[in-house]
Each structure stands twice: as structure tokens, then as C-alpha cells.
Image 1 (tube, rainbow, N blue to C red):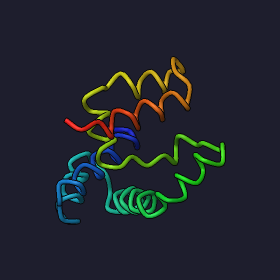
Image 2 (cartoon, rainbow, N blue to C red; image 1 turned 45 degrees about the vertical axis):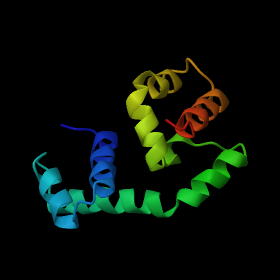
Image 3 (tube, one colour; image 1 turned 135 degrees about the horizontal axis):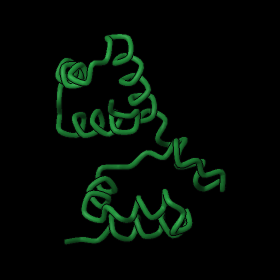
Length: 111
């Protein structure tokens, strides 16, 4: 079964791509999830998006919680183009500050 993080990523990508709610539900139902499970995951994802500014405040207050970190579209594109960056951070190869600085630098780079 697909884990929660993968399902959230699918929902976020579909939202960015402009998918309708029913399309997202159809996609998630392909993973064998019940309607109740889909509702919970979808609502949790929307809640994370809605509380994005709180996540930014958490980062600046030095109470960084990577589970509450919301990535904006430019950051998602950066993580797609540099897949080792997030993995290095999650495995502890780089510090939070280095991860954020690198992500910010690469996301704001004009191509």
C-alpha cells in the first residue's frame, strides 16, 4: 500500500495540475482506500495548505517541524530536479538550515 506521504504528494500534484476534487477521489480510490480514508487524507492535505503561513512562522521561530513543512510550487519543482536534496535532509546528511537555504537559493534561480 502507498504510504501517507505519497498520497499527500499525489493530492498536491493533482491540485497544482488543476484536477477537480472528484478526479482526486477517483485516483485515490485506485489505491484501495475507503471513502472515509480518502476524506481524511484529502482534508488533512487541504488543512496543511491552509496553514502554510503557520509553517513559515514555525521555521523562523526555530521550532522547525519537517512534518508540517509546506512546499510552494517553485520548491516542489526544485525538489523534482534535485531529488537527492530532500533525501539528504531526511537522512540527516545535511542540517535543516542548509536544506532551507539550498532550497531557497535553487528555487529563486531564474532559468
